[in-house]
Length: 143
Image (tube, rainbow, N blue to C red; front, side, top):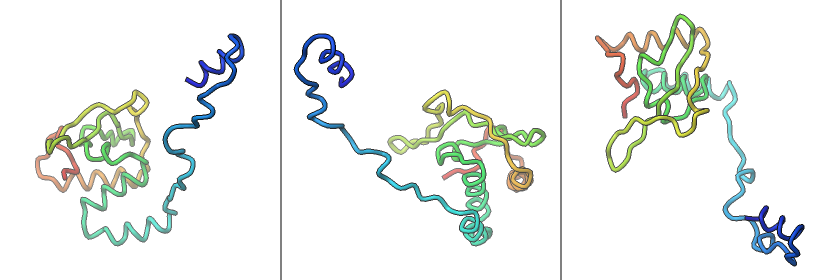
């Protein structure tokens, strides 16, 4: 809207851009400080979570791969390629009106393949191996 009014001021004699007087809508995202764990902080946290395998491996993926919570909750064994050491992100978990729903990511850029560190590949193979007869489309981190 502001761009249109600026154009009108410049080329059509509009006295002033009233959108400037109104100001911006919403909250500025840059006002919030993003809090990120250091590697040492994460390692202390992970050590405390080792007694709970599902939580430990979930946080390992979140931290080392930088995936979102909904992406984590939608992961299945078929998303891992242990030979290439990659993780395919192509779906998202949501709970809508009490129903678990797997959807496509919100944007095309959210579909991606993430390179995993070797140790994380080993850990995830161990985690998936804990499930007896797990199907390729079984969610690894159910709520």
